[in-house]
Image (tube, rainbow, N blue to C red; front, side, top):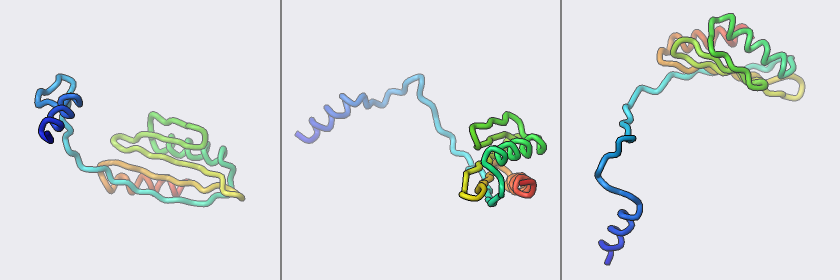
Length: 116
């Protein structure tokens, strides 16, 4: 009875050993390095976001997207985010960079934080 029940469940779930043309293989890759830091600034969230956007542009980031007080951009194989959150008497700004080469990720993160 158990085998019949399991077989029916598998059949109804569409399980088979036949590959479909839309299947794909997930190739394992090394996870990116991610470096982050934060600061408290005496700015409004909007001014902080404009400053973050300006910093990413000055460092050569492309495909910069500003979503409210969150800014994202690409630098070659790296992705950065600058998030400005109201914190009572100013903003808490969080910056992070992710990418494949640790030295570049660290340097980009440092440049963003120093310029903030």
